[in-house]
Image (cartoon, rainbow, N blue to C red; front, side, top):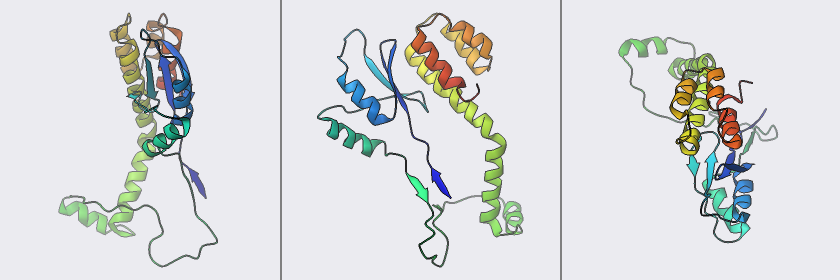
Length: 198
């Protein structure tokens, strides 16, 4: 089974206008070619967090891309090769050992579970992730929208009320409050906050 990790995306704004969205390299090269304007600074945002990020755009395209590859590695494809002989021991799952502190009754319960404490803890974590996955994604999207909104729209009309509506998950009120904001800023905020909940 092949797993492909999601690619990180970025969006660049020059003043109130969206220049480009996409992978880091694509965004960096477009920004590098845009003529700077003192009255409209260029800001690059990571879409997953809504936070601004600085790219070092000095030098040629290859130099810029090489630095970005170190800062933001491209997504990797993880595959289990069926042609490789299976060795003894644990498969390469990326298992990380860390300390966990629990009360004796918790250790007792975990020890009595099929597969022992590690298997039981992994099952509990997976179950909790499934149960709260939508809430976690909604919270991350709301936080990203708020971070972007604070930077790009913090001085616009209705910002405080729009923030309250965003955190109250009142989409109708929120979109109504930001309706008069610059179109590219407004549309990007809505994309960050609600794109996975069409």
